[in-house]
Image 1: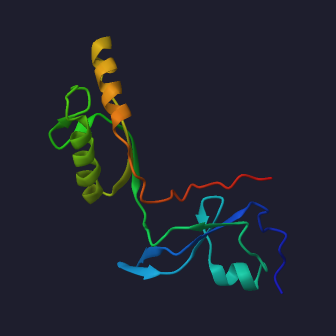
Image 2 (image 1 turned 90 degrees about the vertical axis):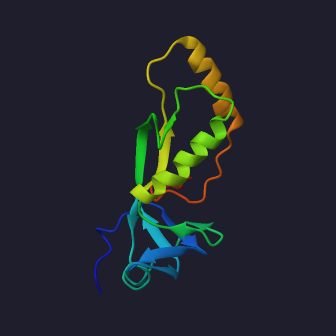
Length: 144
């Protein structure tokens, strides 16, 4: 039987009730993650005798790879620096359209602008409530 000495003591997260993109198809199965890396559940169970430290119910959500854009000033005809009464629909449009480019998360940013623009845009951002549909694979359970 293989030695477990090289096996990490880091917590293991089990994402349950999820659909995973594998071989270009959505499959219903659990996803096991340790230190941000996807684990083979058979090796975890049989070789390491491991189990989940935390279970997260994805409630049928899709888990798929995606890019995170940490600085985006807008897109698709929307400029986040332009304070408008319809800020929510602009950011919603970008949220939907950017998916086709592989981006699943983003951080809206502003180009250098006068203080009055920051104030107006901040009010718009506060009125917008994002609804996350996924859990990032970089999830790190808290050690206790």
